[in-house]
Image (cartoon, rainbow, N blue to C red; front, side, top):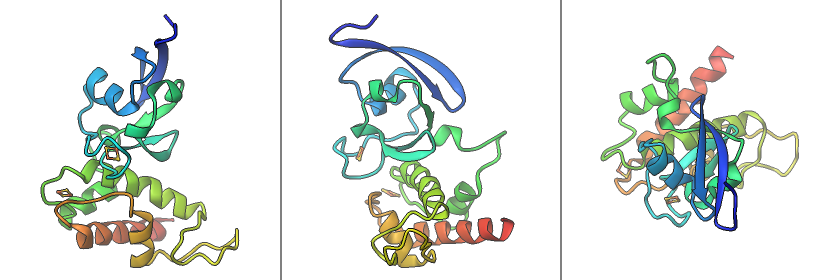
Length: 179
Ligand code: FES
Ligand code: FES
């Protein structure tokens, strides 16, 4: 029932449909974690500063703590729980594990969801502040500096950055070889 304070919404989360009645002020982060019990997505700052809550909304990375659940009505949401398919880790997940891309792991779901979105943005030619010359056709080489800039919204208290960057660069190289 929709009124001034609550709305009925539909979400497709990790390929499963959900109907929710949410307070209009409820964030997507709280809806995913508390209403759908998908607690892989982490609440760090709850203020858009740490990136721990990053999920994919219609394939693009967003901070779920800054996204109202009602604004995601009808959308496809992918959380860390939905990235692996048929029990197989995605290459980026496997690379994080193999290359020690984490220590405590709290930031890791957000880092990995952000990396998936970032690699898609880069493949689509989205510019970044580091190496782009401003041309719409310009697709910057994915250097370490480029990855650090594009992942700068995802903080890691354990400072596992070197391994995170290595995991992303290796995954990008493998995807480039695979075409
Ligand atoms: Fe969303 Fe920190 S919890 S950015
Ligand atoms: Fe601990 Fe990133 S691995 S916060």
